[in-house]
Image (cartoon, rainbow, N blue to C red):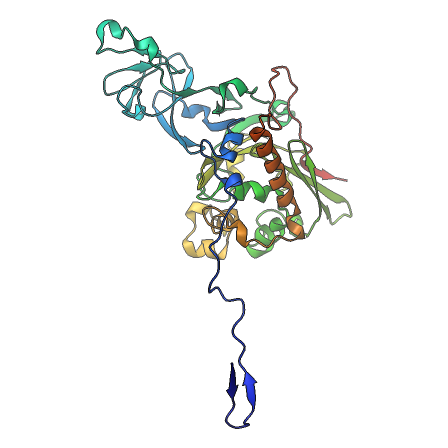
Amino acid sequence: MSAVLPAQGRVIPIVPDQGTAYGRPAPTHRADLTHVGPGTPMGELLRRYWHPIGMAADANATPRQVRVLGEDLILFRDGQGRPGLVYPHCAHRGTSLYYGKVEERGIRCCYHGWLFDVQGHCMDQPCEPDGGRARDKVRQPWYPVQELYGLIWAYMGPPEKKPVLPRYECLDVLDEGELLEADDSSIGGGGPQVIPCNWLQHYENLVDPFHVVILHSSFSGTQFVPEMAQMPQVTWETHETGVRTISLRTLADGRTLRRVSEAGLPTLRVIPSPRLGRFGRVESLGWVLPIDDHSFRIYVVGRVREAGELRRMRTRMNGKLWEEMSEAEHQQFPNDVEAMVSQGVIAKHSEEHLATSDRGIVMLRRLLQKQLDAVREGRDPAGVHFDPEAPAVRFEAGNWVV
């Protein structure tokens, strides 16, 4: 195609616009890494681990609806103090146990009064002769739960593969004056309790130290401390149960800040405080809980010096918590939640252009793929163990001055 300029009589070729969005192929995502429902590759992998599904106080005499790994469940605590996690629809006629009544021995359905204990055994059928002569043949689907660190943990995988609920050295060993605190406000997510995008978008964020310099230190102003605005020298290491990020920064006094963080299996958030108020080993752990393919939340347990300290760590932008900000302020002062959620409910992996600063993300995806392969081949994934006497898990994460 060409055109003639009338004044000069010259012929100038017209080049079509290049790189427009027209004809762009439909984006795709890594379903094997993102989908968490029963029977999916990642769903089956995650079901080989224990996950926190609520605070200890969430299990009480009022049935509570919880959604975990794409499954809707009911959490309660019976009159003997035992927490229970059951399938929501009563095995009799399907009425939701959310409307049930918690009693000494379990939870009773509101429709015909069938009573189930925390392991799903049918204990009573009041409309049947003798309380249900065949009640032993009925079992309400349930999942094993345990309490640890102020959280309720559930195992939702194959019963014969149930591992030991792990303990963690950074939470078991308290320094003088410290106490342990659990929090459910999704600290580290930068926004609401439930964040409306896929869990992997936050999990990969854990091995991306460069966004701290841009998003958290310059684009939206200094969210943490000025030292975090310095572009670090970064290396990554893959180990059996995670990917470790080592970031080096030179402090004003000439010393070096060696900051080590980790993304651990299955969803562990091992990030030392970016506010640098304390140095040494990591102070808290977070677990990224996939609610379903399109939402997640974070439970955090940490060593603190006074109650409420964890929640006070929540980031304030323009002097406000996320939920206090207007939409205009969210646009002007974006945080992690805006960066993650705006990728879409599931990030469009086919449209990515990964660079050298994304090496940690590539390593983390490879580590996850390795675990998917292990489960598919009938092996145990990394990080699960079956010895109750196994030592507590220890991390190298922390802020260190050298």
